[in-house]
Length: 348
Image (cartoon, rainbow, N blue to C red; front, side):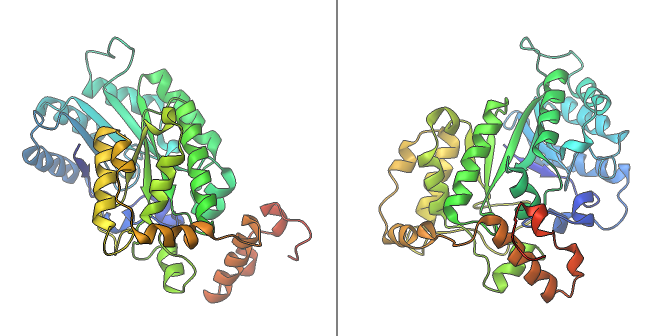
């Protein structure tokens, strides 16, 4: 399924604060983007993609397709109609939940599927969310998502009412967390998403992008990319009814190429990537079970996977935030108070 990312104005959240690992802002256009520019980009994409070969298309912006600061409310249905007229049959877009409204969803559905929803009451349309974690603390303090779980539940409910499908991205490789905490949180988030009607869960393995907090911490030895064995552990630990909704992404290509991707070792990285990609294509767990043994998995088990912390997650977050404030000469009042992090008996 091809991915077309329009070069729009930057994600509004990235301009204000931004998620700790995101590099989408690097692909945004800093000039003011006009509707005419978006039409030209769409027409160019149509000339490059054959809808008979690729009937389904991920077509989105550099943040939220439903944010009028990136794609105006007037031009969004025009672009959808162009894609429909070209022969594309299914459209997937990405958005933060706060930009979805019944009016925007209905206008786009009318443009792309004027005959109305299918026999199951669904349009051939889907919206993908960067949920990342279903834990509000992790969302706020480890990822800086700027949303809460309740926001996504409200968006799911709206999309259900309007006849849209919906998917979620879940982050693997969250800062401040041990590998086991990270995998456990991802499993909980996948369960949450599937139990609330999500069709697909795309587990995004963190890669290293420039100008993000994860790269800043990495350069100072306080963060490292997860091993790809962490993704394998996740698949092995998921019950089948949840696992069948999951695909592993972020390991080999991205709209804005990162500095580098997660890996295992020189001998087996491509082999492990290949097995994961076969899993994505087929959903057959045999591809994961047949990964050849490599000594680096034992090193992963004895190293990254066995790490423990004497501090609870909130204490680690507070320590790191205080260090960042000192390093970057920030006002210490910007650091959350211990009580806001759920810590008692810790000096402010």
